[in-house]
Structure formats: structure tokens, C-alpha cells
Image (cartoon, rainbow, N blue to C red; front, side, top):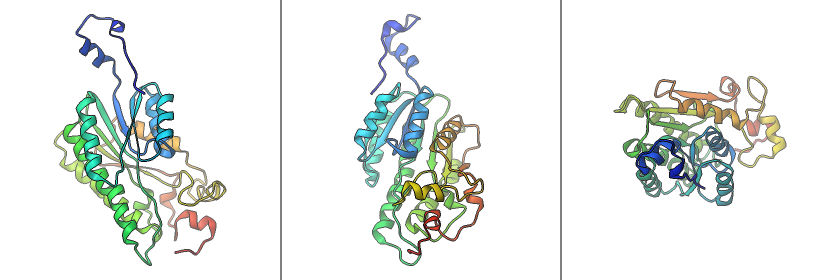
Length: 276
């Protein structure tokens, strides 16, 4: 759903195109924006007055329902395992969005393998969806998107980057690869007004095969012994969209989980599982 504007609503006579451009809100693309943390981020930007482009792979109904609930939004679909298709999506948006200020790389895959045996298929998918494609999308966005006041790339990583454990090996390797690109791309930026950021969540929602009751336990295995709400990640993304931090920085929002060394992923610690 896109917001429509009547030319007659413009208080100052001017060419229609200029009037419409002045009225259109700044745009943000949220990958994986139909549900979970991505949905919270998309909703927060929408309610803050942004035009939200909600990306999904196969959550069409949820994406359309969220778009319909926001003042200005639209839905795009793409499998991020196909990097070429993802770049084409960025190029299409860059060609028609006049003030595209933020790209939020939220979408990822989270499948289990461990240090005992790396699964080649899980590894290939994780490296594509969680690392290679988000970087290619960011490169295309920074090369082609137009924005007033600078562009922002916000890549969601994970607190595992500073607090690793042996579980979800391929996922963690891919997130480390993505995290390494944040300062690299910041250093290489040719436009000082642009910012490349990381946003690292912890155990914010039930993940993998968790039940809600299990997350009530695992989600509190942090320094503050509290659940970290998706809205906290959304508010952090809005803060980063203003560009107050130096480019290349990562903001960790996990209630202090990264400050507690843990031998396993918290979902297995809470369950008492010995699965590898």
C-alpha cells in the first residue's frame, strides 16, 4: 500500500512533480520485514513517518497486512539466496525512490550445525543469505540510491560476534563475515555523510525449534535477567537511522547477554539439551 497525495493539497503553487517530491516521506527498506524483529523495525519506521518497503521471501500475507496497517508502505519479494535477484531489486527501488535513506539488512537463516560437523548445505545457504547477499545489496544501494542528508546501511549481526559458542556454526561464521564488512565498507566510503552500521541482537524471540515457554527461560539468561523486546531493536534502528554514531560502529542490544560467556547457545542451556 502506497500513500497517495493530491496535487491540490500542495499549499504553494509549483510543478506537480516538485510538490509530490516534497510531500513524499523518506524511504527505508527492511529485509525480512514482514514478521518478528523485521516486522517490529518496519512498524517503528512506518509509525515514525517513513515510507516502508517491506521485503519478504514467502510471508506474503503477513507483509501485505503490515503494509496495510502503516501510513505509507509497499511490499517487495525476493529470495536472498539469489544474490543477482536481490541486487536487481535494489536497482529497481533505487531507480524510483527519490529519498531512500536507510537499508536495514535484517533477513537471515538460522539453521543448526555445530563444531563437530559442518553441514555443507547449511553453510552455503548461510553464507549467501546472511553475508554475501546483504553486502551486495549494500554495495548496490550505496552506489545508486538517492537520499537527502546521507544514506544509512544497518546490518543486523548477532551478539555471538563477541560472545561465541559452539552451536549454529555456519550461521555464526556467516554473521562474523558480515560483521567484518561493516568497518571495511565504512572505511572505503567515498561519501562522508553516509553511514554503515551494525545492530547486534541477542535472544529476543523464540528461535529455531523453541517453544514460547522455553524462550521465557533462555531469553532471561543475560546480565539483566530480562527479556529483550523486539521493539528495543526497532528503536535502536531508528536511532542509527539518524547517523549520530561514527560510521563502522555496531550497537549491541541484548540486555547484556554478550557480557556473559556461555558454553552453548542459550536455547540449549535453558533446555538442558546435549544435542550437538
